[in-house]
Length: 407
Ligand code: ADP
Ligand code: ASP
Ligand code: MG
Image 1 (cartoon, helix red, strand yellow):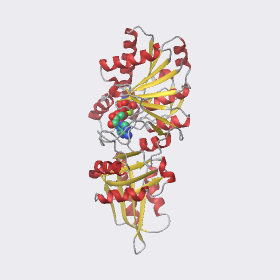
Image 2 (cartoon, rainbow, N blue to C red; image 1 turned 90 degrees about the vertical axis):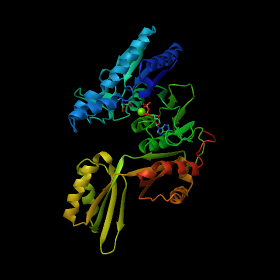
Image 3 (cartoon, helix red, strand yellow; image 1 turned 120 degrees about the vertical axis):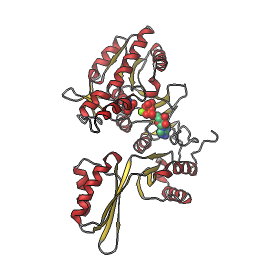
Image 4 (cartoon, rainbow, N blue to C red; image 1 turned 180 degrees about the vertical axis):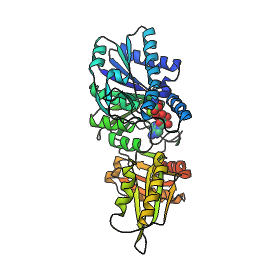
């Protein structure tokens, strides 16, 4: 007998028929003698619907009230699943984040889990209940409802698995595993039987929304194996684990694209000490995080600085930098939101040089201009024009030998 934490995503709980399907899966594992903790998302589309209702009132709704609002989506699905299981003759209890107690910081709409209290769940399991927990939500020290950021119910599941010392956390979704690229964009993508935490973290941070980034960070920190699988089939799925186990030894194991950044360029800034600090502390002080940066030196003691910021902060960052540019006597500030970041990821890169050169050559062959580059030990990212994003993904996927034999 083991304790299994399972998480079902939005498409897996959309409508009563699918909730019945989830209940049957959970009941089968329960009947096999396992203690079951089930984490659910809201029905797919529901969180967007709730956000849009608030946006009909104002562009800038209060973040505390937004969390109070969007957390209701998960309250609906957990109670429906409990009712479904009860109707099948099983003992089931649903709990909200605040009832578990999933304690978070007070950073509304992107809160971090600080602590998860396992006591109430353990007591309910002992009485042979199936425990169903609302994902995506927690509460802060003052009892305010918080949410963990879009896609955050993966993180709820892993945090619960860590707190309950579960041996496995299963993430059920609408694809049957982690693929070498988003199968919706690259039809020849293939399923990876295993992927390392490190690679999955890069992929999740660079556009592969199949897992929430923080869920992978958590899983790695507490060494919890994750299994990503489909709630619509019995395929084995993908194991996300520490390095060294049954790896395929691929040079590159994934290609991603992210379209959530915008680019800002300040041209002809006087090139003297303290300039970069001024440019970046201005946005930093406004709580805007900068990702990629390049600086090009020009003749005549001038320089150009280019960097990326999240699209949501783009307008604000542009305004801030216009003021800074004026103070510094720079020539111009320009912005571009039509960019995409394509990345190739793989632990195989650590020991194999030449991946970057190959990536640049493949993009050049398609006449795709590279605007910015950044790297880590296991990743290379290029910023390109957004209109080429899907093409770039497909040609890179193919060039690095990831295409499936047939589709
Ligand atoms: P859920 O609602 O179950 O949490 P998500 O929509 O958040 O599901 O995540 C699953 C989706 O992630 C898939 O439908 C797929 O389009 C997308 N995705 C992006 N990159 C990948 C990848 N590398 N492998 C698998 N799925 C991916
Ligand atoms: N319902 C939330 C969202 O749509 C959380 C999740 O699905 O993981 O972002
Ligand atoms: Mg998700």
